[in-house]
Length: 558
Ligand SMILES: NC(=O)C1=CN([C@@H]2O[C@H](COP(=O)(O)OP(=O)(O)OC[C@H]3O[C@@H](n4cnc5c(N)ncnc54)[C@H](O)[C@@H]3O)[C@@H](O)[C@H]2O)[C@@H](O)CC1
Ligand SMILES: Nc1ncnc2c1ncn2[C@@H]1O[C@H](COP(=O)(O)OP(=O)(O)O)[C@@H](O)[C@H]1O
Ligand SMILES: [K+]
Image 1: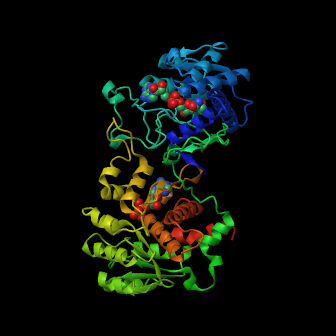
Image 2: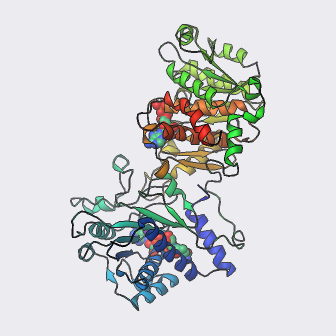
Image 3: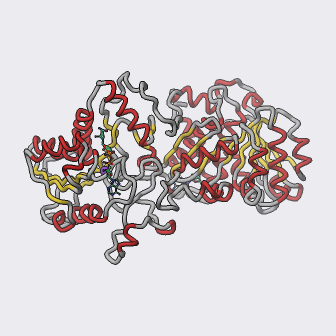
């Protein structure tokens, strides 16, 4: 996965190229439209038995302009092309108007109504060029209905349906937040409901307008990585924005600046860094992770975190549990060492040993005063010395009523790993806006929400989910999506988050020179976490994750 852009960054790049004279808007649009056709044909592969019939749905902006180019390109190749247009020709931008006019010299344009779009044979391709990165409200109901009726056109065998290609993004995707702005299509939806945004409870995860392939330009946009927008992984078409001219116009901040895995580390060097094989032979060279564990019967989460920390490369791992849980844990542990920690005072004494290089607090610890005290002690004892602290689960839940206490104590060596629920409890104002709660305001999106949270904490935030978002106090961000060809839905299993916290703790303990920022360590851990899940496959339970690490490392080149 390369660079990931916001809509504003993409516009700035286009403007920069156009201002420099390196390419005109028309040239960019021509390359975009032709690139979509190439990518669509490449995706479908064998065209011998297809009917060479395409339907293009064009919207009122430049996305529609791309659609007119697609129609002309296919027509030049001998295809039969039907074009439906939603908008007024005189309101089109200069570039889109030009492309519109070139098409009208060749073919017909029909208004986009469900009735008209429903007539005719089932096409090989349906191109969705209705709305691109300029969408600001749910798409018009007529557009959604027209789209739907084309997909329902019958073929002779009554079985196949057309291959849907989204131009730039499926219409209705907010490419910054990954939110889907599509009206409700049920026949009984009254107009008010149609034009309203989906209430939180019914907002679907998948796009109601089903897309097989999304073809975008120059780089993926954030929304492509936050939401699974198409069955196939999005294709990225080069439209020539890499010229020197880019950079003359300042590119606005906001898009993720870190990719996962970090591309600058070649695979083998990266494995070396992760496994610390090059760091020296002694276990103390690879750090000592301390994992705090819960009371009797509550120890599984911390044990899994500890095992992940050890497998991922920490030289030593100690699990520290309350006295009454020692017997239970002693019966379960071998390579992991066991210590007793009564309370925060005992923890402070333990942390005077600076060989303990990373501390993980939270999994299975229980919500309450003891956990709050342990967290604040861990933060105080590490505030000045660069040691890393990973706060997960109950360590975060314990501050739901007093988040300010946590914010004040956090430092730049801290990584918090909330899921969306934990995030919303700690940052209610941000959590509510990850998706649009007020129709008049855009959604904040997971990346912006995580960035603001990281700034508030002065620390690193890893916001979990199918798309995991990372952000730090310096303004760096990253997205790791377990989507498309990295899908691992079976990772949503009890305890998977505890393992992730342990992976970050283990990598942090090893203090690798090659990966210095907490956000990069967390990004590597998120990548390994999904890689382990994919390596194991369905049937996975959290305990299986650390046991996959040796295979994942071997597959990476060791
Ligand atoms: N020259 C360029 O800037 C290039 C633009 N490209 C294409 O241009 C697209 C962006 O074009 P635009 O900025 O014109 O934006 P869009 O074409 O995405 O849509 C914006 C248009 O739709 C209207 N609109 C937005 N939301 C609406 C709603 N809910 N209901 C009704 N109307 C709505 C807007 O008023 C505007 O007319 C990209 O996604 C890409 O497909 C590509 O051709 C590459 C080059
Ligand atoms: N559908 C999914 N695809 C990929 N990863 C997922 C999916 N659902 C959950 N995950 C991952 O699984 C982990 C679940 O963590 P968490 O919600 O803390 O659960 P637990 O508390 O049971 O460990 C997170 O790392 C999350 O990113
Ligand atoms: K589109």
